[in-house]
Length: 121
Image (cartoon, rainbow, N blue to C red; front, side, top):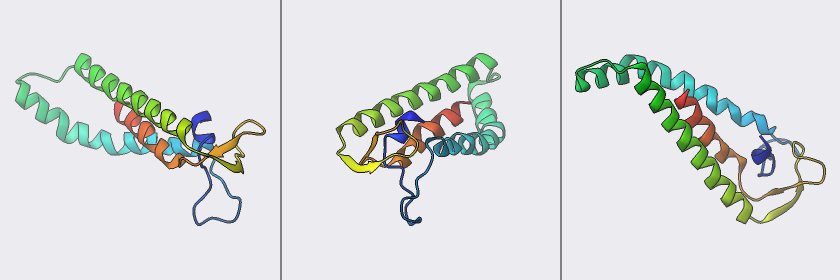
């Protein structure tokens, strides 16, 4: 949330001055879970079990989830590095601490690490 609040959180095509909350982008986590669960249960698990000739066990599922979590963190690190090199706008963020201005980097990109984390969950 803190990272998103320092990005450009202005609502596109919204009323003047409208901004998203940093936690708004966490909806991508829920979307990752809702979209990945049926795919994993109905397609991925049976496909892996038929290729491996054995069950796709709890340990393997945990490992796969942790891999998605690691990719999520790496994506967030990459986005933070991009944000830090982006120009600072002359617009105060409503969700960041007082006096913090937004960068020119769109907070919409925060959906990527949240979605990856949802896939891992």
